[in-house]
Length: 417
Image 1 (cartoon, rainbow, N blue to C red):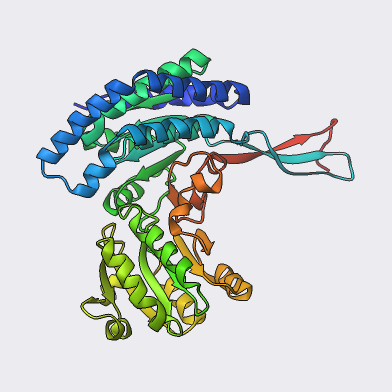
Image 2 (tube, rainbow, N blue to C red):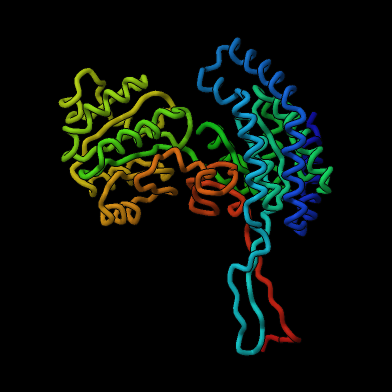
């Protein structure tokens, strides 16, 4: 028999969203501060419950990558708290006048930023998404319904309940933050049908989850399917800087969507750079797969196939291709890339400008690691994901990206002629 649980949550969220839309910046910032305080008060319970769920996942044979995403340790918990406090310091995304004018007849016309309304977040494995999502939604005046993976259900509930307590203490509506407390697919299917109450869905997880959400609902979805990220080492790339960028982009955290997956090396610097890169990468336990030219320069690496250029490994694997100049690099990225994050290492301002103008990606980085595109390093305080869509949001989804706008018109008895 079908439960009304999700319907009730959605209805309550809609009411809360209407109240949040007119909330003051100071109230929302106070709520974020109280949410962080409340989380800190349950830190030991969170670490204990999370450790139990990690052990259960490990005993069930889950992959090391999933275990890492699932785990909250002291460092991750501190990071979660800091994101809530940082997003509170971010400028208010609401009630900004985006454009405006006064007609010759005296009619004042402008548009201003407003919340989207109710945001549904469906995510896997990462319990830190619980606090990130709640923080970004509250900052932007949106109500949020959280649906985390069953492997972290108890951790997510504990986190959500603590933040709800903090938000209510500050004076926000009781249902500004809600979480679905039942495991299984039925609740998700019900959530996908709530287009009368939910304004936007944001799935965070694997490609299969995102595809299922996008194809199974009439609600608009902010999504990204793949993070096939490239770094092009131009012919004038500085050797030391190039190695540092490649190692940071690939090795810091191989299982994330802005990790480097394909390295493009200009043929005019390949002889010099590739042996140095191989030493640095193999010492970090990265498996290398190269094109024919790369294999001639580097012994004992695997051949790269057509599938490799299409692959988001999320693993310690890197494909390498030697290219004949910046035009070939750009053509490769635009053909095989996913529009997520792509970068160039060059000392030439002209090449940097050509790259950023012609590469069709949400984030284009010049002489910087692809790992910076998560949003926090862009000064967004906290983000709820990275979008490879072009409508409504593109790139890191922070408080500004969870707003829309309304037209406001002030007249003095004006009539249509």
